Length: 345
Image 1 (cartoon, helix red, strand yellow):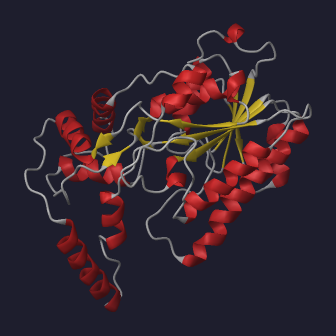
Image 2 (cartoon, one colour; image 1 turned 30 degrees about the vertical axis):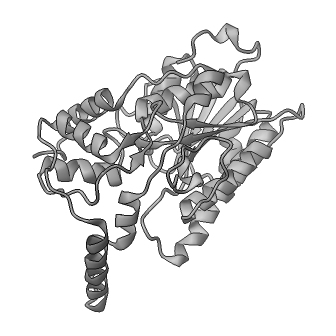
Image 3 (cartoon, helix red, strand yellow; image 1 turned 135 degrees about the vertical axis):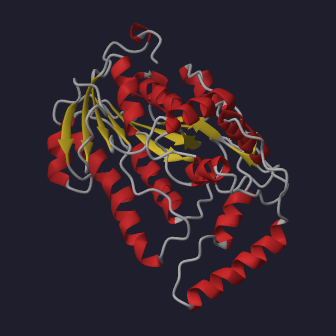
């Protein structure tokens, strides 16, 4: 949350456009900016469900690759938080690259061009620490070189440059990039949702020693970081890692999830090498009979990957203070997941 708006700049954005607001993290961002006192307009391809946003939010339906729709949505706003993107999937088919480029790069260019034309004061792009690639035993920060190794990370890297190179009518930097750690929370889909459900059903066996590191951030803290980035003068023209302030071994993450579930963590684990070989054989066999394998070697590689990213810069420069550590974040996540009809065990 913004501590004191008068401490920042005199010409503070008051009306914010949020693209991709109906996505997994979008509602958290909407609520954080609403609580910080901003007027909000959402712009998404999907209609928000009842109660997803505060009643004061202006809702527009549209696609970020549609120049006319984006320029119309941009009218009158002071800042943009650009969330809309095609997200990461494991081992995407080659033909999907064009869509990643069209949405993540082309959509960002459309948003930035429209923002410049409309005289917007700040464009905040949600990116990912996946642009760094694997840590390989190091701790990465904003000065570390990027080594994206997926369509998603590659296109996010290109989108970052579009935003960081953008200049307002006064020639000053217009954009801020927030490189998010692995975001978790009750609305998030993907690896951590699958891990949580498997642990809840006692259907998960770890692979490897579990000492590989991960960098996470709770979704409510992401919203608070966005509210700061929209208006803080030190954010212009810069990229910041957004994390919970540390990094955690996979064992620690599993223990936190199990503690929140009220279960004991798994005792046994499988060796990486033999397991990867076996999964590779299953994958070949599945393809031979026309089936999609439930697990792939790429999934094993991602599971055992080491990703340690320093998130201290945004704390020092913008005053961001994460409110959720691993324990409190997963406790709230599980509590909210249990409140949903789709989460039963």
